[in-house]
Image 1 (cartoon, rainbow, N blue to C red):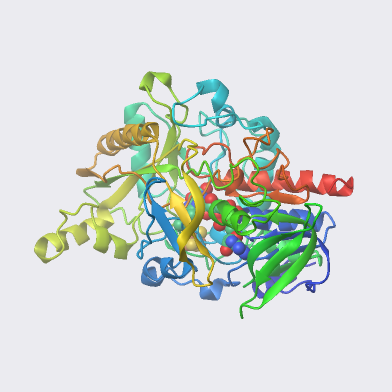
Image 2 (image 1 turned 90 degrees about the horizontal axis):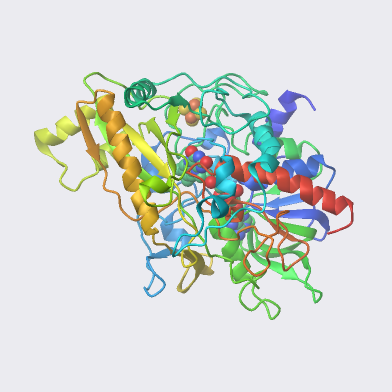
Length: 564
Ligand SMILES: Cc1cc2nc3c(=O)[nH]c(=O)nc-3n(C[C@H](O)[C@H](O)[C@H](O)COP(=O)(O)OP(=O)(O)OC[C@H]3O[C@@H](n4cnc5c(N)ncnc54)[C@H](O)[C@@H]3O)c2cc1C
Ligand code: SF4
């Protein structure tokens, strides 16, 4: 198929159409970072695939630069007033709805959160897969090794670089894990924040390097290079420069003629037969009519909040505590990744509101270090963080900030001269941090809401404070005229939904095996943020996609051997 036709297909969502009664090889629930990759890989391998996505299919024409509609009206389908998510700090508290922001932020659209994410694309390091051994136990947490290593995942990270499209410079990060190929594109042009961050790091004896980003720095595989519009974090990209699955994997899956992506199809249950095998899923279409889509196997890629919810909604006599939950691990070990913010304003204008968020990163504190006295590691980057409207609403992030008069005007004038130094840190897997069903609150569809229970481990808090101190040092060494800290507080909102159906070899303590097959149901697979065993240091999506490439290969091989 010609590239021109592929682009048309990507926009229109044309392609194969199956009927519900057709038994396809694979039904995939969710078309986000993981689901999109699985769809393409399995369709290209010759399997018939239906992807059921609860959100609509958006095109470039739908992507505006309207901050109010995006972040106040939650125009990516994540409006907390509809979705019914509740939050509580501990299991003994009654959870409540935050009407201003959902605790679990994600986009309901074809392409999922890869459509509106910031596209920082860090690989995990070898240590991320072996911290149970390297660090040992941490009281109050279940820090264990992954059943796979970095070396096993490396070829799939490289696949992500080249198939999805990542820009960066190999070898620039002195702590970079082994890579078998360079990046397919050079890094994006450095911004003022990147130059100043580099200066600050250099003064401190640390190394800033060009940020690896899932954004095209030049035309790539029929897509345009980034035009630096500035509405990147939280927004869809009209240029198709952001390497979401919407513009990469999904059109390629459809072009095989074997994959249908069915939007506005909300899955509400996984069906089981008497033998304990799945036969397909029940879903509601846009008019809320229920259908059964039959499949020889089902893959859940609905993310770290919705996948466990679906398993709980699919409880039965065979699985009274939730489908595939004989271990009791479904929904547990939720990890967010910590984030810290340090603001810095300079003498001259930086005009950071333009272009992508991040162009420079440092990993000098990536590894956990016993000398610090607590577990944890992280990376630091430089960015604008706030879009103009939010600067006007939140300013320096303190309740004491001026809200009117000449002081408020002064604050607004500081915007073009300001930047942020952001820390991104580990979150420990804690059994009581979880996704469960709220017994009291329902979403607008009438289903029990997602209940998030989350309390940062004390080591997570220590790591955040440690990284914020280093961020202050960088900002000051860069020559900032004024530096301010946003308070380090326990998280109650996240865009990183990790660990809730963890991978492992022991069916008593994990939900899926290293091939992403659930221990309990032989033809039910899970692959998304929920599969992660540890959190990395922020930016989990590169790993989620690498896992999806690997999972597709393993699942496809099993299917061909008749083992599903
Ligand atoms: C503003 C923002 C910025 C971010 N920036 C970064 C970043 O810079 N770097 C990084 O690594 N990560 C970033 N992330 C996180 C990243 O987007 C996620 O880690 C990633 O998209 C998760 O992939 P996933 O496949 O697990 O789920 P998703 O991409 O969320 O996909 C899940 C899909 O399943 C669909 N779905 C859910 N339930 C159902 C159902 N019942 N029926 C049918 N469909 C369903 C959803 O609508 C969604 O489309 C960011 C996230 C946000 C919100
Ligand atoms: S900054 Fe670049 S990648 Fe981001 S939305 Fe704009 S054009 Fe797309």
